[in-house]
Image (tube, rainbow over all chains, first blue to last red; front, side):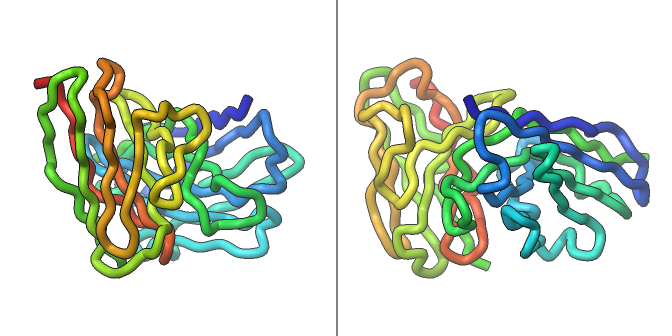
Length: 122
Length: 106
């Protein structure tokens, strides 16, 4: 069955960095675009970034451009989110999620990981 | 950015009754609309995509309708496991979510 497992969350100070990982299993990872979505404590959902199945295209929401970098390693069935210059407003649970159809980003997200909590506080 | 607005913020319904949740888009998204259910401490679960197609394994009591800017999620006969927060999401132009509707037991 499809599984997505995030790791790498934690408590950091403003301006510091953190790298999240998401290990995928149960499907042909290299066929799917992948995304990161976050949820601030007690708040709604915000799309953060996505990456093409072969890393041919990458997109970010405006608030993280220039600070976050998404990448993937299809040999390791993993997607990553490098977060630099972290701010208190980046505090959230970060979910990795799969687009619902192969080779496309024109779909919703059909499988989500359990999330990784990132807390940015001095 | 397409803004998604859900109403009401909280809906109190008794088990066995029908629940109707609304979602409005600030501009047309066609049928590129999904609904998710989220329970405390869990990730969202995809319920509906394409405005009206149930995702795999979703019970028939969940149904979606609408197109353009107005959408509805209906749960025909509420079960205890249906009390949760529901989010709509558009995927027509990037990806934005509504603020959620909390469905609580009356």
